Amino acid sequence: MDKIVIFDTTLRDGEQSPGCSMNLKEKIEVAKCLEKLHVDVIEAGFAISSPGDFESVSTIASTVKDCTVASLARASVLDIDTAWDAVKHAADPRIHLFIATSPLHMEYKLKMTEQEVLESAAAMTAHAKKYCDNIEFSAEDATRSDWDFLVKVVDAVIRAGATTVNIPDTVGYTTPAEMTALIQYLREKVPDSDKAIFSVHCHNDLGLATANSLAGVQGGARQIECTVNGLGERSGNTALEEVIMAMRTRPTVYPYETGIDTTQIARASRTVYSIIGQSAPLNKPIVGRNAFAHEAGIHQHGVLANKQTYEILTPESVGVQTNSIVLGKHSGKHAVDDRLRELGYTLSKEELAACFEEFKILCDKKKTVTDADLEALAEHRAVSKDGEDEKGYKLDWFSVHTSNFTTATCTVSLEKDGEKQEDVCLGDGPIDAAFKAVDKIVQPAEHTFDIYNIHSVSQGKDTLGDVTVKLMSDGKTYTGKGLSTDIIQASITAYINAVNKLCAATEKKED
Ligand code: KIV
Ligand code: ZN
Image 1 (cartoon, helix red, strand yellow):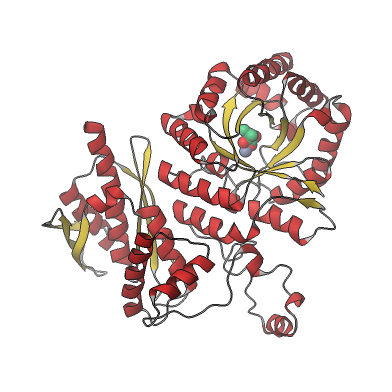
Image 2 (spheres, rainbow, N blue to C red):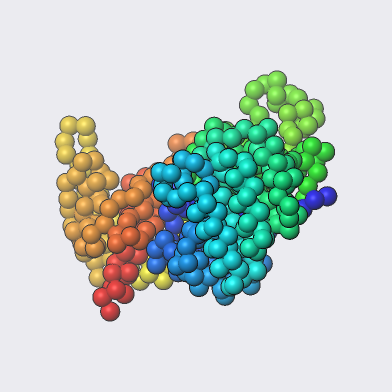
């Protein structure tokens, strides 16, 4: 079977889309999940775009051992030099440069002629090649480019040393038949086409990203660019989980292999959603809560008689556990540890002890603790806890008064270094009042709210409320997490968690 290279761009194309920004710690957490998934290439960021991006690309490059690490660069000397500086310590570095090739982009964005674009593509590929063997070239907006001009560009960059040539459907405009034909055309017309791997990078504006990527492979592409949960600009990019499971479920149609460990898909999906403070739409393929649920009577009947009647892939194959053992207040640490491992979480001794403490508290509030609750506890540990948070403020107690005919009031008491401070504020609702009271005590640096998001972890009115707060200050993101059956408490905890991180960063800057 032909091998398909899986190039993950969750940390670049995914992260650059609104509401999906991640800080360094979060990006490293995602990179670890990608390594466990066994993706071939991690595009860690766009090194020149900001000092923060440079730092995260270079940290991921020196942390990740089993995947190629790439940085994006425009076709310019400074971009390429910066990309190389960021990835040069990787076990297997790649420079990924791009320039647009469509008439629209060349005329209105680049203000360059075809000849200038052609020369720049070749010259900049050759420049990148001086640093590193592994060079990817992307023809941005390829699917709206003139096919014969693309042949010239692809020919020139392969001659200049590109080892992967990516044909992006930048605006999600193409169709499957067109994508197959375009890749076939390029492979036929470019004289040295066998010297590079062809790649597809599809956006999902018409909901065709997965179909277009698979169609590209049928035309001869051997790399797919994708993101976990399909994160990405506008309607997103090709979802990793969809292309992988399509190939795995229909091997006679798609006789290709990848190195992906599909049992890590659910875990990776949850981590990415938890970090960006969102949850999967219920009906999202592969990773949505209903992806393996059979509610309709006729379906249930069929599934009970033979699972294959309505199930084309098993939940276990993507790491979703269905043999749910109910955990409760009599369950011991070992049972919790075993279950977490089955769900894809290996915690250190200290992490497990802390998680078990939280589990016991939860057992007093809920009769049974579900897998979703346990996953939420583990995710919170991974994303919210760090040294900064441990040293910062903790919620001692809070009290709110709110009604539909009075202004909400909140009093909070916070504790830091053994000292307690109390303050009270009015607000537009209890959350606003609570956050203002926290601000009066902590006095964090100026910031804006990027995200305040709350979702329920499971069904039922005793569900945990999972709150994510993302604050932006000085171009950086500070994420706070809170988890409680009381959504006001979860919100206050999340806000304190985020301002602790902001305060620690402000103190470091002042030192
Ligand atoms: O969508 C696109 O064209 C891109 C390129 C930079 C690869 O993301
Ligand atoms: Zn893209």
